[in-house]
Image (cartoon, rainbow, N blue to C red; front, side, top):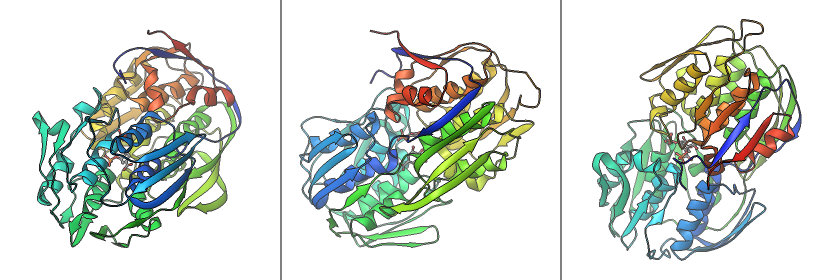
Length: 449
Ligand SMILES: O=C(O)C1=C[C@@H](OP(=O)(O)O)[C@@H](O)[C@H](O)C1
Ligand SMILES: C=C(OP(=O)(O)O)C(=O)O
Protein backbone atom coordinates (compact mmCIF):
# COMPACT_ATOMS: atom_id res chain seq x y z
CA UNK A 1 0.00 0.00 0.00
CA UNK A 2 1.18 3.52 -0.79
CA UNK A 3 1.39 4.63 2.81
CA UNK A 4 3.10 7.94 2.04
CA UNK A 5 0.35 9.24 -0.24
CA UNK A 6 -2.66 11.24 0.81
CA UNK A 7 -5.50 9.15 -0.61
CA UNK A 8 -8.01 9.50 2.20
CA UNK A 9 -8.47 12.26 4.75
CA UNK A 10 -10.51 12.07 7.91
CA UNK A 11 -12.31 15.30 8.74
CA UNK A 12 -13.00 15.11 12.44
CA UNK A 13 -14.79 17.67 14.57
CA UNK A 14 -15.63 18.18 18.22
CA UNK A 15 -18.05 15.73 19.82
CA UNK A 16 -19.89 16.41 23.06
CA UNK A 17 -21.75 13.12 23.53
CA UNK A 18 -21.05 9.44 22.83
CA UNK A 19 -23.44 6.57 23.51
CA UNK A 20 -24.05 3.01 22.39
CA UNK A 21 -22.31 -0.30 22.23
CA UNK A 22 -19.93 -1.68 19.62
CA UNK A 23 -17.70 -4.62 18.84
CA UNK A 24 -14.33 -3.61 17.42
CA UNK A 25 -12.61 -5.95 14.91
CA UNK A 26 -10.56 -9.01 15.79
CA UNK A 27 -7.19 -8.98 17.48
CA UNK A 28 -4.35 -8.39 15.02
CA UNK A 29 -1.67 -10.35 16.90
CA UNK A 30 -3.93 -13.40 17.27
CA UNK A 31 -5.14 -13.18 13.65
CA UNK A 32 -1.56 -13.26 12.29
CA UNK A 33 -0.67 -16.21 14.48
CA UNK A 34 -3.82 -18.16 13.54
CA UNK A 35 -2.69 -18.17 9.89
CA UNK A 36 0.96 -18.95 10.65
CA UNK A 37 0.26 -21.84 13.01
CA UNK A 38 -2.75 -23.08 11.05
CA UNK A 39 -0.55 -23.27 7.94
CA UNK A 40 2.11 -25.52 9.50
CA UNK A 41 -0.41 -27.67 11.39
CA UNK A 42 -1.76 -31.06 10.34
CA UNK A 43 -5.44 -30.70 9.40
CA UNK A 44 -7.88 -27.84 8.93
CA UNK A 45 -7.91 -24.93 11.37
CA UNK A 46 -11.14 -22.92 11.54
CA UNK A 47 -10.90 -19.32 12.66
CA UNK A 48 -13.74 -17.00 13.73
CA UNK A 49 -13.46 -13.26 14.30
CA UNK A 50 -10.38 -12.96 12.05
CA UNK A 51 -9.25 -9.36 11.50
CA UNK A 52 -9.84 -8.52 7.84
CA UNK A 53 -7.25 -5.73 7.95
CA UNK A 54 -4.37 -5.35 5.54
CA UNK A 55 -1.67 -6.53 7.99
CA UNK A 56 -3.35 -9.87 8.68
CA UNK A 57 -4.18 -10.22 4.98
CA UNK A 58 -0.45 -9.77 4.19
CA UNK A 59 0.27 -12.77 6.39
CA UNK A 60 -2.54 -14.72 4.74
CA UNK A 61 -1.23 -13.96 1.24
CA UNK A 62 2.31 -14.92 2.23
CA UNK A 63 1.18 -18.40 3.28
CA UNK A 64 -1.01 -18.78 0.20
CA UNK A 65 2.10 -18.00 -1.86
CA UNK A 66 3.82 -20.89 -0.05
CA UNK A 67 1.16 -23.35 -1.17
CA UNK A 68 -1.31 -23.19 1.72
CA UNK A 69 -4.98 -23.25 0.80
CA UNK A 70 -6.83 -20.66 2.87
CA UNK A 71 -10.59 -20.12 2.45
CA UNK A 72 -12.01 -16.71 3.37
CA UNK A 73 -12.02 -14.34 5.03
CA UNK A 74 -15.79 -14.28 4.96
CA UNK A 75 -17.24 -12.18 7.77
CA UNK A 76 -14.33 -13.12 9.97
CA UNK A 77 -14.42 -16.84 9.12
CA UNK A 78 -11.26 -18.42 7.74
CA UNK A 79 -10.31 -22.03 7.05
CA UNK A 80 -6.63 -22.84 6.90
CA UNK A 81 -5.76 -26.16 5.24
CA UNK A 82 -2.55 -26.93 7.10
CA UNK A 83 0.34 -28.45 5.15
CA UNK A 84 2.21 -29.81 8.19
CA UNK A 85 5.50 -28.74 9.75
CA UNK A 86 7.54 -29.41 6.60
CA UNK A 87 4.91 -28.79 3.90
CA UNK A 88 5.53 -25.13 2.95
CA UNK A 89 6.71 -24.61 -0.64
CA UNK A 90 9.08 -22.05 -2.10
CA UNK A 91 7.08 -18.98 -3.21
CA UNK A 92 7.44 -17.83 -6.81
CA UNK A 93 8.09 -14.20 -5.82
CA UNK A 94 9.22 -12.25 -2.74
CA UNK A 95 6.69 -12.35 0.11
CA UNK A 96 5.15 -8.88 0.60
CA UNK A 97 4.62 -8.11 4.29
CA UNK A 98 3.11 -4.70 3.46
CA UNK A 99 3.07 -2.43 6.54
CA UNK A 100 3.32 -5.27 9.03
CA UNK A 101 6.28 -5.73 11.35
CA UNK A 102 4.59 -8.75 12.94
CA UNK A 103 4.38 -10.51 9.56
CA UNK A 104 8.01 -9.92 8.69
CA UNK A 105 9.52 -10.76 12.07
CA UNK A 106 7.44 -13.87 12.84
CA UNK A 107 7.57 -15.23 9.30
CA UNK A 108 11.37 -14.86 9.24
CA UNK A 109 11.51 -17.16 12.29
CA UNK A 110 9.25 -19.72 10.64
CA UNK A 111 11.21 -19.63 7.39
CA UNK A 112 14.74 -19.65 8.83
CA UNK A 113 14.67 -23.46 8.96
CA UNK A 114 13.03 -24.32 5.62
CA UNK A 115 14.56 -26.08 2.64
CA UNK A 116 14.16 -23.10 0.27
CA UNK A 117 15.45 -19.56 -0.27
CA UNK A 118 12.93 -16.77 0.24
CA UNK A 119 12.83 -12.97 0.25
CA UNK A 120 10.63 -10.78 2.49
CA UNK A 121 9.76 -7.24 1.41
CA UNK A 122 7.58 -4.45 2.83
CA UNK A 123 6.19 -0.98 2.17
CA UNK A 124 8.01 2.32 2.74
CA UNK A 125 7.32 2.33 6.49
CA UNK A 126 8.28 -1.32 7.08
CA UNK A 127 11.40 -0.90 4.93
CA UNK A 128 12.75 1.54 7.54
CA UNK A 129 12.19 -0.74 10.55
CA UNK A 130 14.98 -2.67 12.32
CA UNK A 131 15.29 -6.40 11.55
CA UNK A 132 18.70 -6.98 13.16
CA UNK A 133 16.81 -7.83 16.35
CA UNK A 134 15.51 -11.01 14.67
CA UNK A 135 18.55 -11.62 12.45
CA UNK A 136 20.90 -11.83 15.47
CA UNK A 137 19.19 -14.72 17.30
CA UNK A 138 18.41 -16.50 14.03
CA UNK A 139 22.11 -16.26 13.05
CA UNK A 140 23.00 -17.87 16.39
CA UNK A 141 20.68 -20.72 15.40
CA UNK A 142 22.66 -21.08 12.16
CA UNK A 143 20.29 -19.25 9.80
CA UNK A 144 21.72 -17.22 6.94
CA UNK A 145 19.84 -13.98 6.40
CA UNK A 146 20.91 -10.92 4.42
CA UNK A 147 19.39 -7.47 4.87
CA UNK A 148 20.00 -3.96 3.59
CA UNK A 149 22.21 -1.33 5.30
CA UNK A 150 21.52 -1.14 9.02
CA UNK A 151 19.59 -4.42 9.08
CA UNK A 152 16.55 -3.05 7.18
CA UNK A 153 14.25 -5.01 4.84
CA UNK A 154 14.18 -6.64 2.32
CA UNK A 155 15.40 -9.81 4.04
CA UNK A 156 16.88 -12.67 2.04
CA UNK A 157 16.69 -15.97 3.92
CA UNK A 158 18.77 -18.91 2.65
CA UNK A 159 17.58 -22.51 2.69
CA UNK A 160 18.77 -24.23 5.87
CA UNK A 161 17.38 -27.43 7.32
CA UNK A 162 19.74 -27.67 10.29
CA UNK A 163 18.88 -25.01 12.87
CA UNK A 164 20.51 -25.28 16.29
CA UNK A 165 18.49 -24.73 19.46
CA UNK A 166 19.63 -21.70 21.46
CA UNK A 167 19.06 -20.12 24.80
CA UNK A 168 18.48 -16.44 24.06
CA UNK A 169 18.11 -13.45 26.36
CA UNK A 170 16.27 -10.71 24.51
CA UNK A 171 17.99 -7.31 24.60
CA UNK A 172 14.60 -5.55 24.41
CA UNK A 173 11.05 -6.34 25.51
CA UNK A 174 9.61 -7.55 22.20
CA UNK A 175 6.96 -10.19 21.65
CA UNK A 176 7.86 -10.23 17.96
CA UNK A 177 11.47 -11.21 18.69
CA UNK A 178 10.39 -13.79 21.30
CA UNK A 179 7.84 -15.26 18.88
CA UNK A 180 10.32 -15.32 16.00
CA UNK A 181 12.82 -17.35 18.06
CA UNK A 182 10.16 -19.74 19.42
CA UNK A 183 8.77 -20.38 15.93
CA UNK A 184 12.28 -21.03 14.58
CA UNK A 185 12.71 -23.32 17.60
CA UNK A 186 10.05 -25.65 16.15
CA UNK A 187 12.59 -26.43 13.42
CA UNK A 188 15.69 -26.68 15.66
CA UNK A 189 17.42 -29.72 17.13
CA UNK A 190 16.69 -29.61 20.88
CA UNK A 191 15.10 -27.11 23.24
CA UNK A 192 15.06 -23.42 22.28
CA UNK A 193 14.70 -21.00 25.15
CA UNK A 194 13.88 -17.26 25.28
CA UNK A 195 14.19 -14.99 28.31
CA UNK A 196 12.57 -11.56 28.15
CA UNK A 197 13.60 -8.47 30.16
CA UNK A 198 9.95 -7.55 30.86
CA UNK A 199 6.62 -9.28 30.33
CA UNK A 200 5.39 -9.03 26.70
CA UNK A 201 2.28 -10.40 25.01
CA UNK A 202 2.16 -14.20 25.19
CA UNK A 203 -0.19 -15.07 22.31
CA UNK A 204 2.44 -17.28 20.64
CA UNK A 205 2.94 -19.41 23.72
CA UNK A 206 -0.83 -19.70 24.31
CA UNK A 207 -1.66 -20.52 20.71
CA UNK A 208 1.14 -23.08 20.31
CA UNK A 209 -0.38 -24.88 23.30
CA UNK A 210 -3.79 -24.66 21.61
CA UNK A 211 -2.21 -26.52 18.67
CA UNK A 212 -1.00 -29.23 21.05
CA UNK A 213 2.64 -28.12 21.27
CA UNK A 214 4.33 -28.43 24.65
CA UNK A 215 5.61 -24.97 25.62
CA UNK A 216 7.12 -24.55 29.05
CA UNK A 217 7.11 -21.16 30.74
CA UNK A 218 8.94 -20.31 33.92
CA UNK A 219 8.88 -16.62 34.88
CA UNK A 220 10.38 -14.67 31.97
CA UNK A 221 11.59 -17.83 30.20
CA UNK A 222 9.75 -19.84 27.54
CA UNK A 223 10.96 -23.13 26.09
CA UNK A 224 9.97 -25.22 23.11
CA UNK A 225 11.45 -28.47 21.79
CA UNK A 226 11.97 -28.69 18.05
CA UNK A 227 10.19 -31.20 15.82
CA UNK A 228 6.81 -31.10 17.61
CA UNK A 229 3.92 -31.29 15.17
CA UNK A 230 0.94 -28.93 15.43
CA UNK A 231 -2.61 -30.36 15.44
CA UNK A 232 -5.28 -28.21 13.73
CA UNK A 233 -7.70 -26.50 16.09
CA UNK A 234 -10.54 -23.91 16.27
CA UNK A 235 -9.66 -20.34 17.08
CA UNK A 236 -12.12 -17.69 18.26
CA UNK A 237 -10.36 -14.32 17.91
CA UNK A 238 -11.42 -11.76 20.55
CA UNK A 239 -11.82 -8.06 19.69
CA UNK A 240 -8.55 -6.20 19.66
CA UNK A 241 -7.90 -4.25 22.88
CA UNK A 242 -5.53 -2.06 20.84
CA UNK A 243 -8.49 -0.99 18.67
CA UNK A 244 -10.83 -0.72 21.66
CA UNK A 245 -8.30 1.65 23.29
CA UNK A 246 -9.22 4.47 20.89
CA UNK A 247 -12.77 4.43 22.21
CA UNK A 248 -11.69 4.05 25.83
CA UNK A 249 -9.87 7.35 25.51
CA UNK A 250 -12.55 8.93 23.29
CA UNK A 251 -15.30 8.23 25.82
CA UNK A 252 -13.10 9.31 28.73
CA UNK A 253 -12.37 12.76 27.26
CA UNK A 254 -15.82 13.35 25.75
CA UNK A 255 -18.04 15.59 27.92
CA UNK A 256 -20.97 13.18 28.06
CA UNK A 257 -20.16 9.60 27.22
CA UNK A 258 -21.44 6.21 28.22
CA UNK A 259 -20.39 3.40 25.88
CA UNK A 260 -19.79 -0.36 25.97
CA UNK A 261 -17.23 -2.27 23.92
CA UNK A 262 -18.16 -5.96 23.65
CA UNK A 263 -16.01 -9.10 23.74
CA UNK A 264 -12.67 -7.30 24.12
CA UNK A 265 -9.57 -9.48 24.52
CA UNK A 266 -8.22 -8.96 28.05
CA UNK A 267 -5.13 -11.12 28.04
CA UNK A 268 -3.19 -9.80 31.06
CA UNK A 269 -0.15 -9.16 28.84
CA UNK A 270 -2.24 -6.62 26.89
CA UNK A 271 -4.25 -4.74 29.50
CA UNK A 272 -1.72 -2.01 30.32
CA UNK A 273 -3.93 0.61 28.68
CA UNK A 274 -6.76 -0.08 31.13
CA UNK A 275 -4.38 0.06 34.10
CA UNK A 276 -2.87 3.34 32.88
CA UNK A 277 -6.24 4.98 32.15
CA UNK A 278 -7.55 3.88 35.55
CA UNK A 279 -4.48 5.40 37.25
CA UNK A 280 -5.40 8.60 35.37
CA UNK A 281 -8.90 8.45 36.86
CA UNK A 282 -10.83 6.87 33.97
CA UNK A 283 -14.25 5.40 34.67
CA UNK A 284 -13.89 1.87 33.21
CA UNK A 285 -15.81 -1.21 34.32
CA UNK A 286 -15.54 -4.78 33.09
CA UNK A 287 -18.39 -7.29 32.90
CA UNK A 288 -19.40 -10.57 31.21
CA UNK A 289 -16.01 -12.19 31.73
CA UNK A 290 -15.39 -15.33 29.65
CA UNK A 291 -12.50 -17.31 28.17
CA UNK A 292 -12.46 -18.05 24.43
CA UNK A 293 -9.79 -20.28 22.94
CA UNK A 294 -7.48 -19.78 25.91
CA UNK A 295 -7.82 -15.95 25.86
CA UNK A 296 -9.85 -14.00 28.47
CA UNK A 297 -12.51 -11.57 27.15
CA UNK A 298 -15.02 -9.17 28.71
CA UNK A 299 -17.25 -6.21 27.93
CA UNK A 300 -15.69 -2.84 28.71
CA UNK A 301 -17.96 -0.02 29.89
CA UNK A 302 -16.53 3.51 29.76
CA UNK A 303 -18.00 6.81 30.99
CA UNK A 304 -16.64 10.36 30.79
CA UNK A 305 -14.13 11.29 33.47
CA UNK A 306 -11.81 14.14 34.31
CA UNK A 307 -8.43 12.52 33.80
CA UNK A 308 -5.34 13.52 35.74
CA UNK A 309 -1.68 13.47 34.75
CA UNK A 310 0.49 10.65 36.10
CA UNK A 311 3.98 9.19 35.98
CA UNK A 312 3.36 6.04 33.92
CA UNK A 313 4.83 2.96 35.69
CA UNK A 314 7.57 1.52 33.45
CA UNK A 315 6.48 -2.08 33.97
CA UNK A 316 3.21 -1.21 32.17
CA UNK A 317 5.01 0.01 29.03
CA UNK A 318 5.31 -3.31 27.14
CA UNK A 319 1.74 -4.17 28.19
CA UNK A 320 0.39 -1.06 26.44
CA UNK A 321 3.04 -0.59 23.76
CA UNK A 322 0.68 0.05 20.81
CA UNK A 323 -1.68 2.25 22.83
CA UNK A 324 0.71 5.11 23.63
CA UNK A 325 -0.33 7.34 20.72
CA UNK A 326 -3.86 7.45 22.11
CA UNK A 327 -2.68 7.48 25.75
CA UNK A 328 -0.81 10.70 24.80
CA UNK A 329 -4.17 12.12 23.70
CA UNK A 330 -5.63 11.18 27.08
CA UNK A 331 -2.68 12.93 28.75
CA UNK A 332 -3.24 16.06 26.63
CA UNK A 333 -6.75 16.28 28.09
CA UNK A 334 -5.79 15.55 31.70
CA UNK A 335 -5.31 17.91 34.59
CA UNK A 336 -1.58 18.12 35.29
CA UNK A 337 1.51 16.58 33.76
CA UNK A 338 1.96 13.05 32.43
CA UNK A 339 5.46 11.60 32.17
CA UNK A 340 6.36 8.52 30.14
CA UNK A 341 9.83 6.91 30.37
CA UNK A 342 11.28 3.55 29.27
CA UNK A 343 9.39 3.56 25.97
CA UNK A 344 12.19 3.98 23.38
CA UNK A 345 10.60 1.11 21.40
CA UNK A 346 7.98 3.64 20.27
CA UNK A 347 10.62 5.19 18.05
CA UNK A 348 10.81 2.10 15.79
CA UNK A 349 7.13 1.40 15.11
CA UNK A 350 5.30 2.22 11.84
CA UNK A 351 6.56 5.77 12.51
CA UNK A 352 8.62 7.31 15.30
CA UNK A 353 5.57 7.53 17.54
CA UNK A 354 7.27 9.80 20.08
CA UNK A 355 8.32 12.41 17.51
CA UNK A 356 5.18 12.24 15.37
CA UNK A 357 2.76 12.45 18.32
CA UNK A 358 4.75 15.27 19.97
CA UNK A 359 4.73 17.27 16.72
CA UNK A 360 1.00 16.71 16.21
CA UNK A 361 0.09 17.57 19.80
CA UNK A 362 2.24 20.72 19.66
CA UNK A 363 0.41 21.74 16.48
CA UNK A 364 -2.79 21.34 18.51
CA UNK A 365 -1.48 23.79 21.11
CA UNK A 366 -0.48 21.18 23.68
CA UNK A 367 2.86 21.44 25.50
CA UNK A 368 4.32 18.03 24.62
CA UNK A 369 8.06 17.54 25.12
CA UNK A 370 9.59 14.43 23.53
CA UNK A 371 12.47 12.74 25.36
CA UNK A 372 14.79 9.96 24.18
CA UNK A 373 12.58 7.28 25.71
CA UNK A 374 9.20 8.91 26.22
CA UNK A 375 7.35 12.18 26.54
CA UNK A 376 6.28 14.85 29.03
CA UNK A 377 2.79 16.22 28.36
CA UNK A 378 1.16 19.10 30.14
CA UNK A 379 -2.55 18.41 30.07
CA UNK A 380 -5.04 21.10 29.12
CA UNK A 381 -7.87 19.49 31.04
CA UNK A 382 -7.52 21.65 34.11
CA UNK A 383 -8.55 24.80 32.31
CA UNK A 384 -12.33 24.75 31.80
CA UNK A 385 -13.37 25.59 28.29
CA UNK A 386 -9.83 25.52 26.93
CA UNK A 387 -9.76 23.39 23.83
CA UNK A 388 -6.83 22.91 21.50
CA UNK A 389 -6.57 24.37 18.02
CA UNK A 390 -7.90 22.39 15.12
CA UNK A 391 -5.04 21.60 12.78
CA UNK A 392 -3.89 19.35 9.93
CA UNK A 393 -2.10 16.13 10.85
CA UNK A 394 0.07 13.89 8.65
CA UNK A 395 -0.40 10.20 9.52
CA UNK A 396 3.17 9.35 8.36
CA UNK A 397 2.04 5.93 7.14
CA UNK A 398 0.99 5.03 10.70
CA UNK A 399 -2.56 3.83 11.38
CA UNK A 400 -2.37 4.50 15.12
CA UNK A 401 -1.36 8.14 14.54
CA UNK A 402 -4.36 8.67 12.25
CA UNK A 403 -6.81 7.11 14.73
CA UNK A 404 -5.30 8.90 17.75
CA UNK A 405 -5.79 12.34 16.22
CA UNK A 406 -9.33 11.40 15.20
CA UNK A 407 -9.93 10.87 18.91
CA UNK A 408 -8.09 14.10 19.77
CA UNK A 409 -10.53 16.00 17.53
CA UNK A 410 -13.30 15.27 20.04
CA UNK A 411 -12.05 18.32 21.96
CA UNK A 412 -10.80 20.44 19.07
CA UNK A 413 -12.05 23.96 18.35
CA UNK A 414 -12.83 23.25 14.71
CA UNK A 415 -12.44 20.50 12.16
CA UNK A 416 -9.16 18.56 12.10
CA UNK A 417 -7.94 17.13 8.79
CA UNK A 418 -6.03 13.89 9.18
CA UNK A 419 -4.08 13.18 6.01
CA UNK A 420 -2.99 9.77 4.68
CA UNK A 421 -5.75 8.14 6.73
CA UNK A 422 -6.05 5.13 4.38
CA UNK A 423 -3.38 3.53 6.57
CA UNK A 424 -6.09 2.83 9.18
CA UNK A 425 -7.16 -0.20 7.11
CA UNK A 426 -4.01 -2.02 8.20
CA UNK A 427 -5.49 -2.72 11.64
CA UNK A 428 -9.02 -1.30 11.80
CA UNK A 429 -11.24 -1.63 8.73
CA UNK A 430 -14.55 0.14 9.39
CA UNK A 431 -13.03 2.57 11.89
CA UNK A 432 -14.96 5.63 10.68
CA UNK A 433 -18.33 3.84 10.60
CA UNK A 434 -17.76 2.61 14.13
CA UNK A 435 -16.81 6.12 15.32
CA UNK A 436 -19.99 7.47 13.74
CA UNK A 437 -22.13 4.74 15.31
CA UNK A 438 -20.93 5.88 18.75
CA UNK A 439 -21.67 9.54 17.96
CA UNK A 440 -18.26 10.89 16.92
CA UNK A 441 -18.20 13.62 14.28
CA UNK A 442 -15.88 12.15 11.66
CA UNK A 443 -16.06 11.76 7.87
CA UNK A 444 -13.79 9.87 5.51
CA UNK A 445 -13.06 11.96 2.40
CA UNK A 446 -11.44 10.54 -0.73
CA UNK A 447 -8.84 12.99 -2.00
CA UNK A 448 -6.34 10.88 -3.98
CA UNK A 449 -6.69 8.93 -7.23
O1 LIG B 1 3.82 -9.80 18.66
C1 LIG B 1 2.98 -9.00 18.21
O2 LIG B 1 1.94 -9.38 17.63
C2 LIG B 1 3.22 -7.55 18.39
C3 LIG B 1 4.20 -7.13 19.25
C4 LIG B 1 4.52 -5.71 19.47
O3 LIG B 1 5.71 -5.41 18.79
P1 LIG B 1 7.17 -5.57 19.46
O4 LIG B 1 7.44 -6.99 19.65
O5 LIG B 1 8.12 -4.95 18.44
O6 LIG B 1 7.12 -4.79 20.73
C5 LIG B 1 3.44 -4.79 18.96
O7 LIG B 1 3.93 -3.47 18.88
C6 LIG B 1 2.91 -5.22 17.60
O8 LIG B 1 1.85 -4.38 17.20
C7 LIG B 1 2.39 -6.62 17.62
C1 LIG C 1 3.51 -1.87 15.85
C2 LIG C 1 2.41 -2.34 15.24
O1 LIG C 1 2.37 -3.38 14.35
P1 LIG C 1 3.52 -4.11 13.54
O2 LIG C 1 4.78 -4.08 14.36
O3 LIG C 1 3.02 -5.47 13.27
O4 LIG C 1 3.69 -3.34 12.24
C3 LIG C 1 1.08 -1.78 15.57
O5 LIG C 1 0.08 -2.32 15.08
O6 LIG C 1 0.96 -0.77 16.31
